[in-house]
Structure formats: structure tokens, C-alpha cells
Image 1 (cartoon, rainbow, N blue to C red):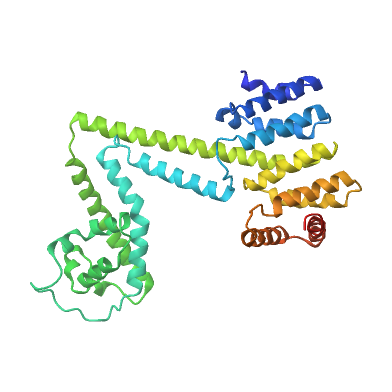
Image 2 (cartoon, helix red, strand yellow):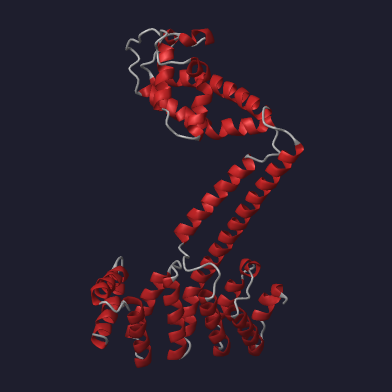
Length: 380
């Protein structure tokens, strides 16, 4: 199938050609044989243009294609733009983390990436922690019964970055660093509290910058030592590389899937107005098909479906009994719960009515309220 020629054929001057091409795409949608690559290439956008075609012979299969694509889509019922974009951002962050941990990175690059990834969180916690300290209080000298261990005194830089990477809990560790500063343990590093006015936030930040420079350097060296101690036999390297490539491939596939899903959701949203405008050129049966498509878009959480549904309700004022009937029937499908248990159905119906009324302007409110009134009279 020459998928890349659909734009030219869908815009052919001959009505019969346009109609046959749209109908072919409808059959492919019915058979669930439209690949993701074609969605990415814009097939929904192309056929969406035909929703406003001057010829009913083209419009009817176009709206049928849209309904069939939505009904048989491979992406499920959740087309919520907010939820899907959020999930895509998580996948992109996951891929970024995978790339940062490429096993082919040399130890130096991995160590640099580790420190850079957690630098800002460590620094912000030091700044926040120092701001709450009573720097004028007295500390008892360390003795052999003290809780401090040599590991804490020597390993606090690594512990800071470990807290950022794992637990996010800095409270006790920063308290230990403050105590060591007060006791002058770090004077051999050139850090003397007498050189800083610790009541001044600017001076506190200066000390934080000095500490961060030392901590980053120490953490980098320890990460390098740790990396160099890892087993380096070729078989293990190949296994790690294969596992990493598999994770990266799956992540890339998930990203591509979500991007195509968002593309489809965007194209369907763009087609809503065209579906309604095009149907108004035809009869009540054609309008019914368009309204059913719009309602389905709402059920699938397609963007702007609520806005277009309000425009559908505005058709209640049309001087056409058939159109008025379709609008009332559409309201019934959308607003009246089909649950057989009245104690469940009645509250659900009330919630749906309130939801469609929420945020409406005065003109829209009059249209919606008129539709609901007629619907309740017809379906008490």
C-alpha cells in the first residue's frame, strides 16, 4: 500500500477518487490495519480535511473513518492530554537516566554524571540546613564514647550524594557536618568558622560553596575508585551492555508509542469542529453520525470535546425538527446514566448534567438548559 500518496489522492479534483480513497481508509480502520507510522505521517489530519468536503459522497466515509479509527484504535480509551503528556515526560526522564548510565561510558564520565546529577539537590539542602542552625550554640568535644564514627568524619562527602541519590534525607547528616564545623575538625581543610559571619546568609552561602567544591571532588574520586573495582571480564561487560540496550530499546518504543498516541489525540481534537461544520451541510442522518463521533470523542477524553458538544446543544434552536430530535437524543446518550440501579444511575446523571453546565457562558447555559429540559420531558 503506497501510504505516502494519500495526501495527493485525498485532494484529487474528482469526487469519485476522493470518495474511494477515503472509503479504503475506512475499511483499513475497520480491519485495524492502520500502522502507527501512517498515523505519524498525518492520515487523520488528511482525512479530517474531507469532513468539510462539499460532496456528501466524501463526507460520509470520512466521518465513518473517524468513528471507526477511534473505536478500533490500539491506544485504548485514555486520550487525556494531561495524563499522557505527563507519562511521556516520565519516559523521557527515564531515557535520559539510561543514557547517563551507558555501560560504555568510561568511569570518569560516569562519575562526573553522578555528581552533576545530584549537585543541585545537595547544595540546596546544605543552604536550607545552615539557615536553621543556631551557630552561637556550644558543642561538647568528641570523645571515645561519641556517636561519631571515623566513617562519618571521613565519608560525609559521599554520604551527602548518596542521600540525594537514594533517601533524600539530609537532616542528621547536615547536623553532623555542622557539629564538626563548630568543633574545628575541618580547620585542617582551611574551614574556620571564625572566617565567616554565620549570621549572614551570604556568608553561609560562601561556606556552602567551599564545602560543595570539596565534596564534589571527594565524591568524584570515590566514585572512580568504586568504578575501577567493578569486575571487568568481557563476558560480564557484554551482559551489562545487552541488558542496557534492551532497556533502552523498550524505553524508546514506549516513547514512540506515546508520541504517536498524542499525535492521534491532537488530530482527533482538530477534527471535531470540521466534523460538526461538515455535517451541517447535509441531512439529519449525517448530523447524527457527526454527533455520535463527537460524543465518542468525549468518552475517550479528547481535548475540546466539551466545547464542541456545547455547540451541538446550540443546534436546538435550529428550525428543523429532525435536527432538534438528534440533539435531544445526543444529550440523552451523554447525560443519562444507563445503569439499571436507580440509586446509582440518578446521582451519576445529576453529576453529568452539572458537569456540562459548569463553566458555561450565559448563551451556552440557555442552550444546555433548554436541551436538558426537552430531554427530561421526552425521557422522564
